[in-house]
Length: 129
Image (cartoon, rainbow, N blue to C red; front, top):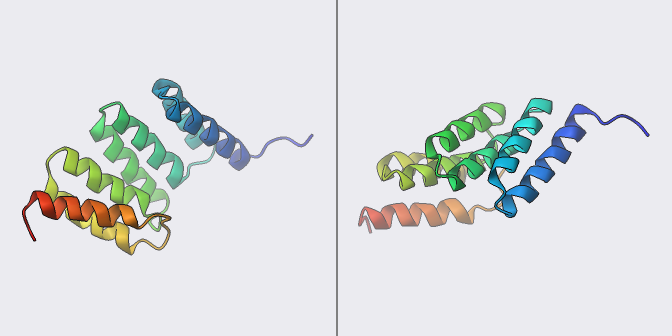
């Protein structure tokens, strides 16, 4: 059998991390996402590591990972939306809005409904009808 490439290893580790995250085994997920990033950095792995941190209440770490994701691939929309969501958790609604708007402009995003929904939440919290 051929040896696993760095990218294949990263994908395998990412998938394992995601399984642990979905089982709420967050420490295991963090370690596996980090190993995935070490093998082959992707915007997805940084974003999902950030998402895991957010589940742990580590919002500043979550934002930092999303910024790394954007550095790796600025076309990936998820980290922009996630930063906006995390800033809303921190009650920084005005700071969140530009990030959510950037998510809508991202060329690579599976679920544009999320930034729309989060923008609605932001404007509602500001009572900006």
